[in-house]
Image 1 (cartoon, rainbow, N blue to C red):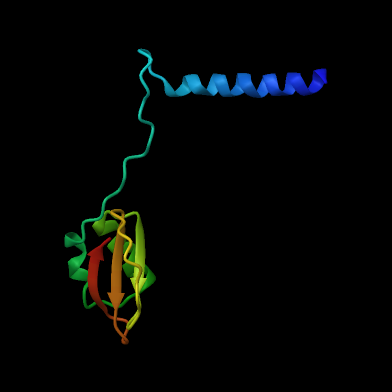
Image 2: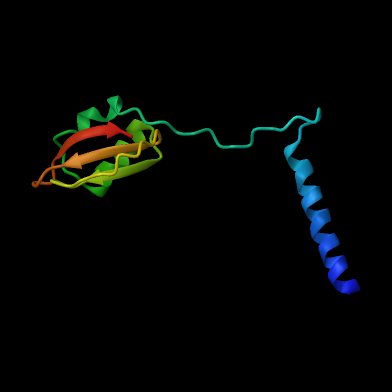
Length: 103
């Protein structure tokens, strides 16, 4: 029984010690979250008409500033969830990019 209690005490002390890492010198909580990447499709519009390739997807990600890329094959349905950090790239049956949007 003594062993079990000392194990729990050790976990409690470890959690207490980590809690201090998030507080600033005045006791306020620091915002340690990574700044969200937001998509801007305008700089990537010149890729419309190009072939839908992995390299082109990487270039669209870079140009748009998005964190993730979603490919949209021809005649496919997409979920309607909106993500400000995602760029959407639709292409046609000839693998040509036809639309670049954010969300």
